[in-house]
Amino acid sequence: MGALEIAIRSSMHEVGGKLLESIINSDGGAYRGRKLSCECGEEKDFIEYRYKRIHTVLSKINVKRSYYYCEECNEG
Ligand SMILES: [Zn+2]
Image (cartoon, rainbow, N blue to C red; front, side, top):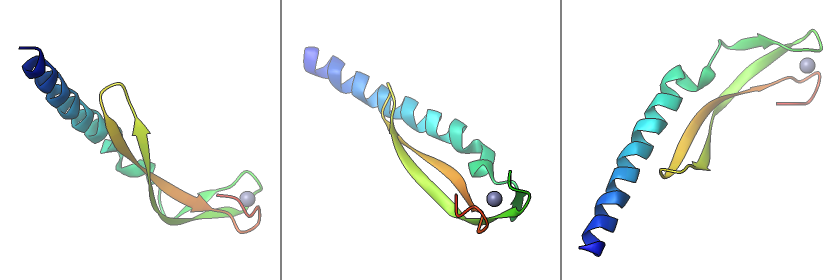
């Protein structure tokens, strides 16, 4: 019985993790256009989507985020 319970719990965590991942990524990686205004007054360019693997209580999930880069500040 114990092994079955552990297997079911593990499966439920995986399902919950997938649900959490889809909810977190439902904003399209927080994409806000090809350019964003930077604090320095210049513009940041959209470079690519980046993924970060995060360990949650449910499971490990991939979080998609837009990466912007400002050539003036040399910062992303
Ligand atoms: Zn800047």
